[in-house]
Amino acid sequence: MYTIIPLLLAHIQELNKQILFLFKFIVKNIPLDLGKSKDDSLFSPKYNKLKVDKLPIIKVPEKKNYKELLEQYLKQ
Image (cartoon, rainbow, N blue to C red; front, side):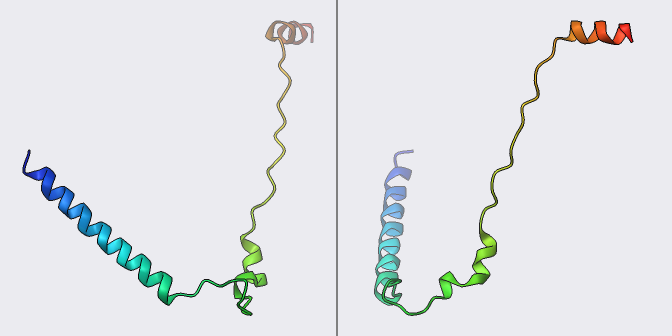
């Protein structure tokens, strides 16, 4: 049990180094200047179909007393 913990910690540190390397690579090589770019491909009309619909109106039915309903049924 005690030999697994240092191995797992070393593995986590290696994964953390890889994540930081990939993050730095993405930041350096992929421009994210949306305000400065003239490309409006992110705002094209074909993405309008991905909008969320309005929520439906949910009506809560009124609660009725079963005794009164039974009396009405028996009268009929």
